[in-house]
Image (cartoon, rainbow, N blue to C red):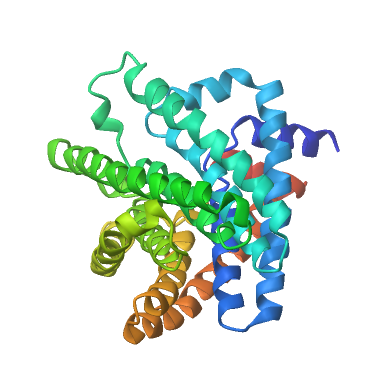
Length: 356
């Protein structure tokens, strides 16, 4: 038991701030299954989403209380700091899925938590990880996790648009929140894209540098599409009426770009793992692949409905099963990894420690 406790403490100490991506991935695929009428699969995914969310909140609080130095190190690391935004996105995605079962109060609470956290981290993380560090040039450490900054903003927009039809008294406020955060997210996508592109063009790009979070570039596009489609469906409000046509058009543009990015990302993975033989091992960033696939599927389904584009909806429905398959593989590998690295005691312990 002492060995297990020590290994659990080590896991908490080194907990990746981006681990809430499993909540994002499970939640969004659960949303897609619910939309497709696969209620049993959706419920099972929701259980995983809820369990992962509660577990990670507890572990994160434990880490902040016991290993504050490691948390500060992550906040000041430009290559890891943006992973904290997965908490915001995971909270909102969880809330959106609960709203589909009529738990609107829980969704409102989660949106409030996510929105307030977004306001704080939206300024703190860029300052501590980018402007507040003495390391220069910071752009050399830019990577795909920077796009989670975008995903967090758009997740707030999606959650606000989800609740807008429910609370008549807060309808105009929620419309302002949705349009405001969607607009900020679009601007942040441009900024993150410039920084990440500069890193790729100005510094050597080795196979091991093309990590899973680069898929978030596509996921950020997809959630921008989803948020835009939800805003287009909203009831008349001054902020919505002023931007409905613009947002609807941008949603189609972002969907097209997200579609274009998929072959690029697949080719990058082939170059990394097949051509250059970088070992394919499990870590928390694997969920950064699953979430974009699920978000692309759900975004296509909503966009097809909101803008009356059946082809886009059909593509989204087909993509949903691809995302679910990848989720299943990632989940099984994660369970095996956690068993071997935290629970299992014996010869496997030595092997794990040596490989670590």
